[in-house]
Image: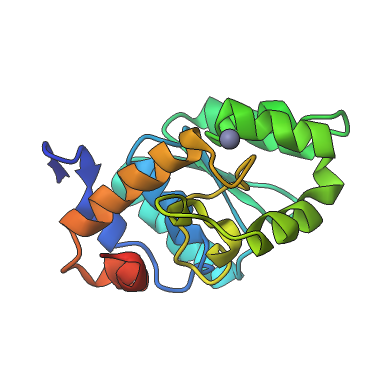
Length: 190
Ligand SMILES: [Zn+2]
């Protein structure tokens, strides 16, 4: 059921399969907060995808799994399909894909500027510079460990747009902190 105070469907989030990748949970959280129009999961084990298909059907979401093994989830099938087509396309698509996945404009622009192939190196450098409070909330280096609050690489160490996303995620996590599904973020709660 959706809670009016947070506009967040906690029951759907709490019933997600427990065998997704660590980082898939922040993507799903941002999707359910409506900060992300589409989600790309992957690449997950077939069992996890089977569980996710069931979850989508139960909760009224549409999905598509691409031949390269990614799962795209959205509220409309066409939107999931477009995200998959854009992601699979050979033309430069980082800006459009970033829009479909809900990344801030400034951060999309940055990826375009540095080139998609250089993202990992860029992120390493950015995160090694450190984040001053409150921007520690946008530290994306914990993404694969599963307790980041954003699902993209921020454009700089003090990106306001990324902070807005992280704060909204944190608000929901704090509000539902007693639920087992929120335990992975315990260390980022104040
Ligand atoms: Zn930014």
